[in-house]
Image (cartoon, rainbow, N blue to C red; front, side, top):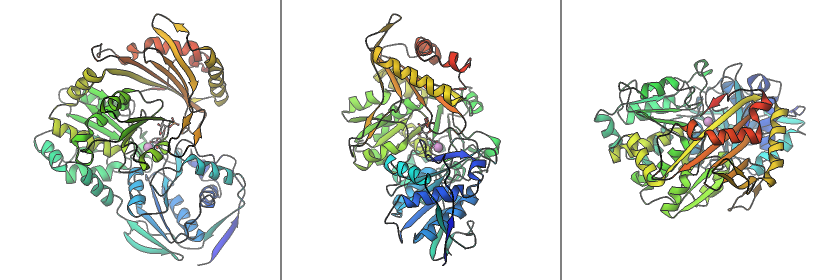
Length: 544
Ligand code: VG1
Ligand code: CO
């Protein structure tokens, strides 16, 4: 194997965001763009000579090209073995599992998640460490620093690996194993959940629709739901991964899954609807006549996890990202277990999971997961829901209502303003930040009195690291909150995310329309931050 050292010049924009480096495909197609970034990752790591690297992606446009480049760079940099999913496919949670299961050094996850794909869409590369989770900030900061000065990368002159052929091949001196992307993951799911009970549920006539959105979960859902669990053929729709997701937007929310939502609100619709995103780590849960918000879903799954075999002895603790509603906090309080609030992004859960301090984690952005992997896991959440439905023999709506009657309801919504001018968005957040010291103690309207106002700083209790400026939060004495932060996954301009929450006690009103219930907070956030006034938008791009 002859290692080639190729001269390159740095790109200034290779700063990893909330979840890896996400850019337009056209940006990734620039000369050496992938090579620079992958080499910068390898340059920021050590001790991987002869070790295993996992590579997989969500099948989006440019996956195949980037994977072949990454394999050649891995060989030239001294990895001993690469494990890659057949046809380059691995869902994000499956990649996490494969890293852990085969004790790999780390992995490259090629995805831009819920962002659109295709030649005009987005692409992304994320590095995951040996615990299977996204690299912590210490590493992503080092990678970014390296990209700014990189002047060469190492590769080899070798033909493409046949990614469609399961089995062992070689790239230079390095072994390449093409593996079944589904098998290990499916076995893991079977070890966690009561598959016989779920099979019984389907056998009893329970109906479900799973929308794979032409993204990565299609093969997994076909194998697990229709194969192992006996759900009727046709339960999974849009189950073939396509490079452009069938021109769709693989974000499982009420905007992009509206037709499924509408169906679930009719008597003819199925009993249960679910969907996952581009890379398979997000989930959407809809029962008959009941959409379950991701924040509520986290709380419900935590409260009922003991009904699944893997969690029957209870859970150690719960973690949620800061903007996620406090519904889960009430469950943790009742169970007498640890509760942690972390910045947005799954990388912040890794230490807590590794230390055994939490078992279940979640984000308001439709991400839930547990200590079985170190990523959020869309199908895992769907299977845990099915396990709970099978054991409790109640519908989703009844379970949600009982939950609210026990813990109270956290009305919750997120308003996204996408592709806003970055300078305007940055100034808006800065100006709000400047107001924060003056807010505590102030009253707005009859019942909104500010209890605290700050820019969230996270102190990791496990490794002692600090992450500052993680989002502005304004908390009120009645438990209501306004949170504002800038997205770290968008690829054009800036995206402002406004998160609003209000608590209604267990004996309170649980049937209000969410946007109506939150109206005073929505109005107040416009008074304080002036998003619509300053961006010229009359409404959010997406309301979830
Ligand atoms: C968004 C979500 C965040 C999630 C991240 C990656 O980040 O808000 O909760 O962890 O996407 O999810 P941001 O910075 O745009 O708000 V995924 O499914 O893209 O891997
Ligand atoms: Co995702």
